[in-house]
Amino acid sequence: MDLHRHHKKHRNILYLLVFLLIVFQIMSFIFISAQFTKLDAKINSEIKRVEKSLTSHFTNLLQKYDDSYQQNFNQLSLAVSEQASQQKSFEEQIKLLESSEQDFSEVIEDAIKGVVAVTTESSMGSGFILSSDGYLVTNYHVIQRGDKLRVLTYDRRIIPADLVGADKLRDLALLKMEGEYNHLKLADSDRLQVGKKVIAIGNPLGLSFTVTEGIVSALDREGPNGLEEYVQTDVSLNPGNSGGPLINTQGEAVGITNFKVGGAESLGFALESNAIKDSINSIAGKKIIT
Image (tube, rainbow, N blue to C red; front, top):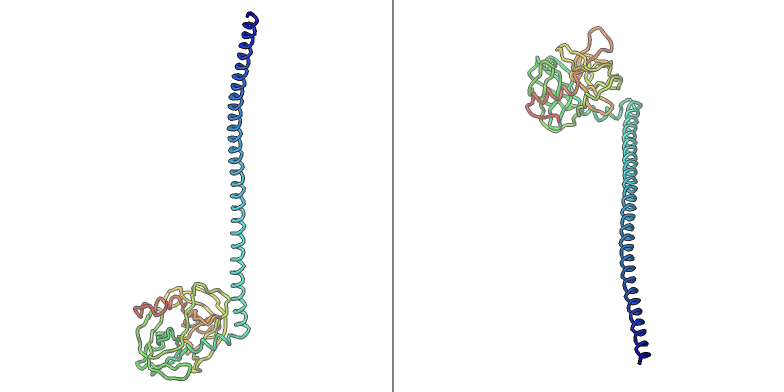
């Protein structure tokens, strides 16, 4: 009986030890699981931090690359644009040289069709057509003593004209013919340069549609009216040239031949085209020339 109790006691102790061992293992498992959870959370946090750092780093690298690429692209675009501009300027210079080498022949062929002779009962001069509907300009002194105005066109037609108005200060007269005509375009005289070749077309001494060649000698010269609006040229000017155009190598009128210094050679003067445009539009009361 005592032996039985003794065995029972040992068995209970063994059960207790087993129970404690199980509890210990459970607690150890819970502890280890908690540690793994914390470690996993820490690892995930570190991974996210590293990913964020790498993302930021690569973003900065990409931004720097984009900035560098954009800068290079802008520089390349600028270089291409400058090259295109230089190419265009070079082509224009080639055209100018070609015009010069051909003695303005191609330019004159078109420009002369817009030039006219202007006559009255007592005088004769030159003029040029400003618009396709028959407005033309000449010097006021050419027509101031006449009543019957006649215009001789390049195709040898004689057409009556009416005086629209005059700018006596600048020695300009605006006339009007009926019909459709070839006309000259006015250049921007602000872009004129000393040394550039020009030609004058007119009717010196009654010799219709005579062409003379020269260069621009000076700009913004003061005229008899006190206005600094005259282009000085060494183009040969004679009576009858008054009112005719001074033409550049593009076939545009840069001025209207007006006067020369008496007794001197190669000292001719033409009212610049920008002054002509302002004056003519003012006389007409509308924009004949844009």
